[in-house]
Length: 212
Image 1 (cartoon, rainbow, N blue to C red):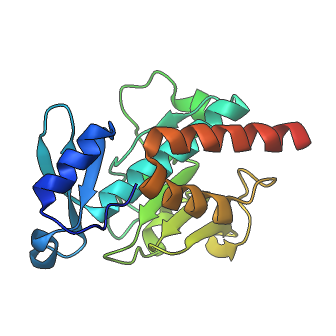
Image 2 (cartoon, helix red, strand yellow):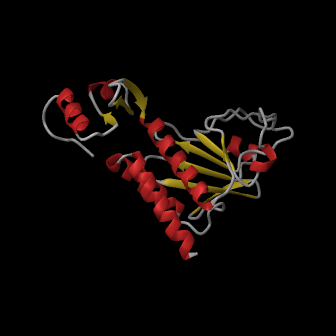
């Protein structure tokens, strides 16, 4: 729910507390001092922290991917912001989120990922609202699919002959309109809340699976 009414921030918090909204995101004066930042407030403890909007997007996108994989019933391993580095790369990369899906069994139960013997993640996700991710190191790492979210568009890049090619479809989820649906539910989470959005998204995935 978006509260754009007049009144102090304290009064707005009180209104959201009354209707049991567990978390609140506030664009305030500090957002002017720290661009792309918001205040996250937890209702029960009233604890407040400053977070970057990139963090909000990466968490929701990651949660949507996890929900999708669970509904499809594919085993996966999410490593979050893990640093990957090897000699062929100009510099290490630390995606906002990454997933082992097809190669999950090859890294299952490992205490660490050693790229000399382990494959790269099958999917890497970068939130590029405040910066732009370069392809070269991901290409050197040979990550099969790279998603970039710029705040408006989800760009899907598929590795073809060692180079990324922008695609309208995901090679991992070829029968789903990922580039359209992920932004749609990400935006929905800003008004409906995270849990309600995940329920709606899971219902949509089940409908697609039944149709296919």
